[in-house]
Amino acid sequence: MSAQLEGAVREALEDLASSAAPPDLTRGAINRANRQRAARLSVAGLAAVAAAIVAVPMVAGGLAGPDDPLAAGAGQPGSVKPFVVTAYSGVNGTADVGTADDYSLLLDPATGTYEKVPYNEAVPSPDGSQVLVHEGDNSTAHPSRRGLMDRASGKVRWLPGNFGYTDGATWSPDGTQILISNKPKVTTDPGHGFLLVDAETLAIRLVGSPDINSRNAVGANFVWTPQGKELALVHTTNPTGAGPAEVTGIGYYDLAGKLTRTVPVTNGLLGDGAQFSPDGSRIALDEPPGSDDIRIVDVATGIVHQQFSVPTAGRVLGWYDSSHLIVYDYGDPDLTERPSVKVVDLAGKVTRTVPFAEGAESAQRVYLGASASLQTGVEKLAF
Image (cartoon, rainbow, N blue to C red; front, side):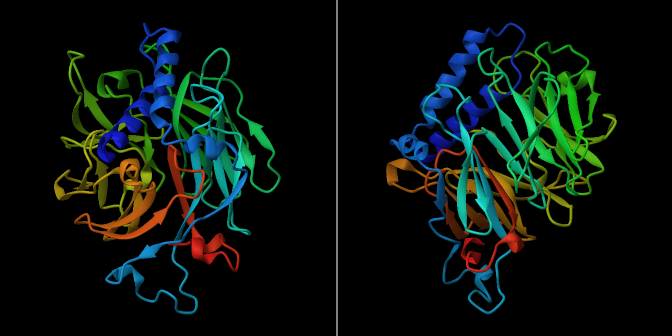
C-alpha cells in the first residue's frame, strides 16, 4: 500500500470510528468500523512491539539538513530548539479490535522517556501540569468517559456524565478551559454543539447550536482561535448524501454558540487551533483524506496564499514559525520509512525530521509542547 493511501485510510477510519453515528447506524456497524480501523492500523507487527513498551526513550532528536535555515545556532550554548513531542495518543492496542485498549505515551521531561498510560487519548495542558484523558469507545462494554489527570501524581478527576459522542477535546490557549465537540446520537438533539469545561472546578457548560447539522456534513470539530475568545468550524454541506461533502467556508462562533461571521473557503479541513499562524492572520488547512496538499489561507478573506504538497503527510500539527509548518508524516512501511514529525517550509520542502519514539508508530494523534520543560541532559529531544 502506498504511503499516501495508508495515511488516507488511517485518517478516514479514525474519523469514522470517533465521529457521531447517524441515528440508524447499529452498534454492530460501529463495531465493524472499529475493527476495520484496528486492522488497517496494524502495520508490520508494530502493535506487538508497542504492547510491551512501558517507558521508551526518544530514538532521535530533530535531524536537520546542511541547508536547513532552522539549524542556525544549532549546537551553540543555550540554543535549545523550541518544541518537543509531549504525547503520542491513541497507540494501537492488541487485546481489543476497537479503540478501547488503545493507550498513550507521555513524555517525562526529567528523564526523556515516554511512559505508557492506559488511556486512548491523552492531551497535555499548555503548562504540562495536567493531562486530559479519555477511556472507552462509547460501547456498552466500554463506555466512554473523560477526566483530568494530575501529571505529578497520576490521579484522575473524572468529568461527570456522558453527554453523547464527544470528540476533539482541546485546551484553551491559556489552559483554563477545555473545548469538547458534542455530537449526540440523535442528530436533531438541541445539545449538538460543544462543551466548555472549567479546568479547575470541572464545571461543564453545554452550548447547543441546533442548526449546526446543516453546516457540518462531515462531523468536524470546533477549534479554538488564537486568543481563546472564539471558536472556528469548517462548514460543509452534502444535500444529496452522495459523494464527498462540499466545503463552503469557515464559521466563527462566540462562546455562547452564536455564529458571528463566515469566511469563504472552498476546500480544506481545520482540525486543531494550532493551524492558525503565530500572528493569527493565516490558517494552514489540510486537504481531505486521499490528498497530501496543504493550503495557506487568509483568515479574513479566505484567499489562498500558498498551496503545496507534502508526500505522505497526514495532518498539520501547527506552525514552527511564521514561515514553517509542523506536520504529521505517516511514513511508508513499504519503503521502511518510519512515521515522523516533519518541519516544512511553505513550499513543502522538508527541513527537519523527527522520527516517532519506539512503540509509538501507530499513534493516532501527536501533541507538541514547549521544550522549556525539558531538564538538563534531555534537550536533544527538542526540535
